[in-house]
Length: 263
Image: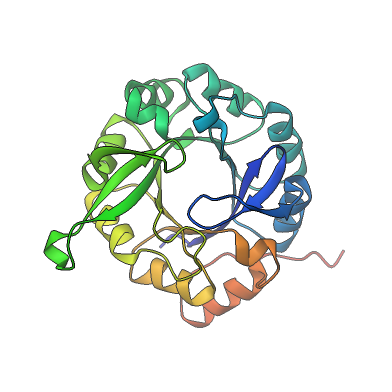
């Protein structure tokens, strides 16, 4: 059995880490480089770095910041935001990241997933999905729509069908983010994560809504996620990564613990 992963997320705007509710990005959350260093020291399994306005504003990834963060940490590192071409993917990986996360561009030009997987491998190609719950109150009527450009633009695409297509095209991992839950701390959209996990055979990273270790436990156990992404609870030190992992381990969730050298 593979260990479940705990992944702090750094949402960056104009070189600063920010947090908000449903992509509002209205609250400063610190220096992403310093935060990355702290999370590495605490035993994060991976880090995710998103330039959250790059796609909407048609800007390039902040290459210098990516390089600085990658030089600071020793855990796997994913970068996304404004990834539009295969050259953007190349720049991310050459800048020091292990994976490139592709969202809006994949909807507009799905072949970028094929190209990335063929040139750099599925292990370096992450399909990122922002989804909004649609339909009536009846569970059989609920579906999730893919939205792009930082959650601003609906696409009409069914998120479950899109997840399957991303994997068929070569994505080796999916980040599934609930726009409804994002930043609320009310918990992940368990039904969304579980529905995607049941449709594909790659690791699913759950995103959006984490308010504490209990929410991570729910999405890892009930939601069948391989990893749980969180931001605010770590940035503002409401919880530490060791605290979260201890909580999960006590509930028989397999997690990696940091080994501290005594030499």
